[in-house]
Structures are given as structure tokens and as C-alpha cells.
Length: 236
Image 1 (cartoon, helix red, strand yellow):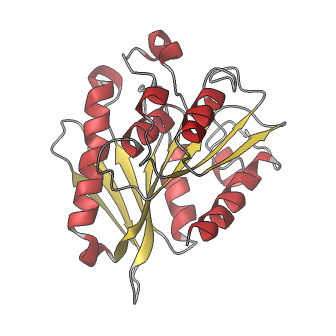
Image 2: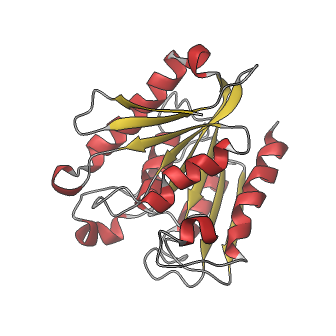
């Protein structure tokens, strides 16, 4: 695997490319980590990318502005620029742009959802893990975001969402439920898994992410990854 970092036009932003050699174009996954705009969480970034790469994806991680440079609109621009770069270089990256999707965690889930709803989005499928959807924790994160439910439209790509009923950071009723309802109101295909165990910020919820996440794991919630891969097969 060849790992590279590509600068984006958006200031303080870049794209990590986890490029696997392949005899044919592979599906691609653009990963948007969480971290409340205070850091790019390792649990949501390189470990998720390597896991997807081990399942024959070309994987990418967007590093958007955080800490003193954090800005929601700038982060959205970074995500859009990342997709533009990948599609423009699809041949050399051995990625199939018709099988290129996005997955985001927590605050990164809000960015992923927002990008999936723009006109002419290049994302063909969407994964959202315990996402921020409404601007209810803007003060906590120190940014000004938006209510992403208002962006959903008839062209929003098929979306897979998972979370935990134990989540007090982005509670189901305040974030995931309204977004699912918005998707269904536009007849967007959606699959939802709200686990009775686990919590916010578990990433893969297994030992691989647990060792950089204070040993926070949940065997049941970790099933989301297998469910997500099986869901993708239904889209073919």
C-alpha cells in the first residue's frame, strides 16, 4: 500500500490517500473523521482507512481545518475539493468513480451528510456514524453549523446510518431520527441500525480502534461494519 498526503486548495486541509495496487478500479471510500473540530481522531481516520483497504477499497481521509483554524464552511469546502481531486485522478488512483462513497463519524458525519446533499455530489453512497445533524452542540464544538435535515433532496444518495441509544452527545431523537425522517420524506433509500449497546465515538468499536480510544469497544456495535459492507452489496 502506498500512503500519500495531498494538499487541498482549502487552507489547513489535505487528503490522505491509502492507495492499493489493483489490476482493476476498486470502489472508493472517503472518510471524514470526527473530533469536534478540535482534532482529527485517529480512531476515525487511518485505522478506518486501513480496515476498508483490507476489504479491497481505495481509501481516503479528509483532514479539514481544526483547532484554531476550525470553520464549518471551510471544512465543507475541503470535503468537496477532496472528491474533485479523487474523481479527476481516478485512473491513476485505480478507483471507480461510480462506486465512490463517503463515510463520516460524529462531526465528520455532519460534513459527510452535508456533502451528500449538494447539487451534483460525487458521492454514490453515504455512511453516517453517530452523526451530528442539527446545530445543537455548536457551542460545545466552537463552530457555527447548520441543520442538515433541511438539505435533503430527491437526489441524496442511499444512506446507511448507525448509532447507539446510549449516546448523549448526539441523541437519537435529536439527530438521527430527524435525518432518517427527512430521507424517507424524499424517498431516499436508507438503512438504520441503532444499537442497544455501545455509545458515541466508538469508531469501529473493536480492539483495533479501542487501543487508541481508551479501550472503548463494544462487540455488538462493531457489527455495523459488516452490516455496512453487506448493505453496499444491495446497491449494486
